[in-house]
Amino acid sequence: MVEQAGISIQQIVEKVWLSIAERRLRPGVQLKEGQMAEIFEVSRARIRQALTALEREGLVTIVPNRGAFVCQPSVDEARDVFFVRRSVERCVVERIGKSMSNADIARLRSHVARERVANANDATTDIIKLSGGFHLLLAELSGSDFLFGMMRDLISRTSLITAVYRNTARFNCGPDEHDEIVEAITAGDIEKASRLMQHHLEHVESELDLREVRDMSHDLKAALA
Amino acid sequence: MVEQAGISIQQIVEKVWLSIAERRLRPGVQLKEGQMAEIFEVSRARIRQALTALEREGLVTIVPNRGAFVCQPSVDEARDVFFVRRSVERCVVERIGKSMSNADIARLRSHVARERVANANDATTDIIKLSGGFHLLLAELSGSDFLFGMMRDLISRTSLITAVYRNTARFNCGPDEHDEIVEAITAGDIEKASRLMQHHLEHVESELDLREVRDMSHDLKAALA
DNA sequence: TCAGCTCAGTTTGCCGACAATCTCGGCGAA
DNA sequence: TTCGCCGAGATTGTCGGCAAACTGAGCTGA
Image (cartoon, rainbow over all chains, first blue to last red; front, side):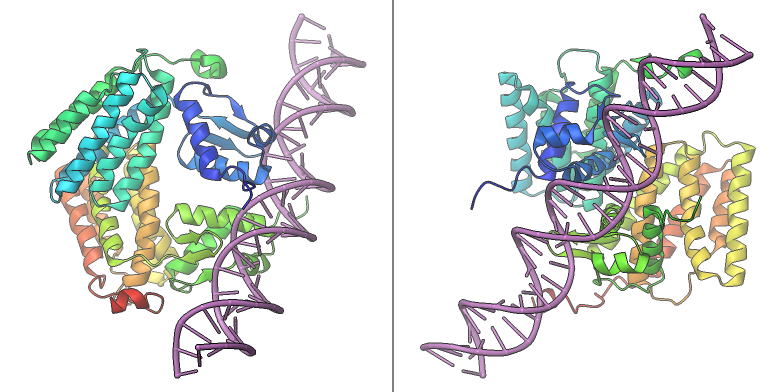
């Protein structure tokens, strides 16, 4: 049983995703297959699969015969993502109210607790993962596989948007607001939980600088229009 | 410029999709790569790409080291799809009210007219395509790329569910209800359009037989549990 | 009789190599 | 100078082949 399997596709996707979320890969950068194959020490076939997965998640765009590039979401697209996300998250919260066991509550509280630890330790990677994971956990507890899949999509795109447009240096999407939401759900006050969620999302969006377009180096034509 | 390019991946996906929607491919059937490569006269690599695309659309499930099979959506999953679809379509209609040009109205009416023609001619393939296309067009006119993508997903999955669970021989999701929705939108009565859409979707769902599980040949364990 | 094992046949997963396409430098003419 | 052309280099798209994994029939032994 030698360690010969190499790195899995999912692991490649996750590494690239993290690199984008941590702003180590800037939007517009080309992800060359050969280069990545060399880095991860696998053949191009596996890289291609990882890239198509990343395209599905909205993190890269693949141009035929050109290659894969880290997405540069426009301001309109960013607002669009947040608009849809507000609707979907409201849907999640409303659906969650119908069936929440004590074990579910425990999972939520445990998750928020881990967020607190990550925040205290300034563990950027964990903070990013757990922050999205909270919303993903809510979707999972809603019991709808579809909502779960949609949230997965929305979260990865939100991560990209945050990486591109975030204004402040720190993530203020801290565990406090998540905690309030959990408490509202625990108390059975779905109306309040929904309101808190809307406020939370608006808060996250408000910390982005969505007024001006960043990095117009590739958008000269749009700038001159 | 010889005809040498062969069939494109998108064309393969569409052919398989149609075969499923027209019930010529039954749920649970394995889509073997070699077999399909022979049928479409391309190499397995392209077939693999088509299959992953079909998996993304929820039409097939890919089991590692086993292969790709036409999805067998459970009753719960079917209800889940319709639940999410009602929410999303409501979202689409509400968003559409804000900005509709005369050209948009014209496109909608033209589409419904084509649906009428297809229905009159009993052109099953066109009926299936256009029926989903109407909802897709609404999503496009909503101006949100996200809603459009989500509707694309939901429609393909709905098509599969309809193919598996539909009770009546004919599609009663005729152009009449679509027409009413268009007229409500034209009149600017978004509230009415939203109500009509809800009713329309409930109508479609009600024509399915979601009480019993079909084809348990592969689910013997579940049947005996 | 039946559970467990073995092994050939089939199918998928992966890789390296070749063909098609695009990029971008230089080169020449208006 | 500037525009268009072109060819070398680089990158992606596709293919056929090989190794790994799974399936199912047949065999063995209790």
